[in-house]
Image (cartoon, rainbow, N blue to C red; front, top):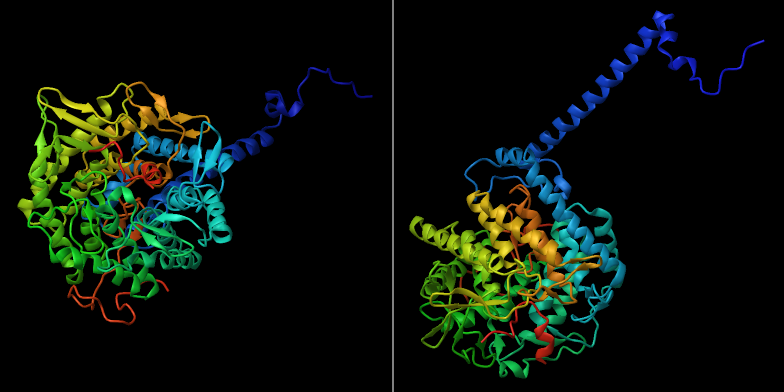
Length: 580
């Protein structure tokens, strides 16, 4: 009769004495543990080797479109780097600080998206503190469309799939809503085209064509210069009273990338013809300094004001002169865009001023012949634009552009660091002996400074731009993050919060942060161009088109080479009611 074992005793196979009496079993156990350890370690090494090989593949144009966290795998070496991309990728992979920062940005996007998904799904934007959704863009699901490419690039596939399904099943444009042509173009049309380029899903292109067709009547004016507002249901277009009946420069000059891109992808030239006719009209009386006032008559094509600015209502016109040239792969067909841009940059040099005593470089505003020492945070896109524009410039000009870009980036960074909250105000005044002073004190999660930091990092490889970006990201985390999303500040001096998570925070601010801490081969700048809402579109060479500025003839676009009331405006990203 076997004796029962004590309740506290272990199974005998766990006692060392068991194996000491049975050397063969001890040998088997040792072999098992050694073999298992070897297999696990070998698998770990294989995974690491595979990741490096895959990175090398996409640098050569092999492998999938996205690799790290869903980032773009594109082939060639970017023109912005002196070292090879493979060396740069390997260096960044080995940098745990950069990886950690990128992971934290991705977590911030997930928090913002999850909050929107929980409290405002299907609405345009989330009010985090009220925990509800609001529609400022006609109920087109602006946050969903604006987030598509950000989710995809970050590898947040389940979230992207849900957003894609909403677009396919719920996005309709037959709404009795007076829409901003500009905002609808950059957010909705741009977001859909970017999603199409990233995924090749035809549904996105079909939806893009649908919204573009509803916007087209806005260009039916005496000159072809579009009205700023259109009813999506009736097609009635008009300019609001607060502009004095004029069209806005940053509106009429910031639709070219999207509509040209749509013509390239559909083969229908009508879209590019509409927006390129606008440039033809502006060139008829383009000023010698290349600087246009912010209001233009849609009837005569003439300016109706003397105000010139690289801030609100002027900014992205100049951005798109450069980007249409890049979008067309810098061919002869788009050469006149580059020429106009360089002419405008020479004029911009006349707005460059410096503060005292710290010597902050800033872009003044002009009215007639008078300069005003004021600069919008919106104008902080300019350093990135200048860095991007060094490519293709003669050496002397390239050096001048980059030097100014560095100086302006320093100023924009200090827009943030000079306030108690470390978040920038909407605009700044410059007074003798006082450097910069906050003008309009709110911060609505704008992206422009982060955008320029991303371009400056890619152009120069100087790690200070990543460090500056991290200072700003940490300020957003401290001041703007809430349990239910991200909010802006009503006052950057006091830290008082507002109740709005702008859709461009998901489309632009977080995307540019993410790219700032990603390899430069993720959405490489020689393969993609960003629209002004940070939606990346593939660069497609424009060739065999009439170079004349006259309207192109009817027929299929031969450049197609890819896969077959002012209250409303106060909410919109490019209008600065606090400005002069």
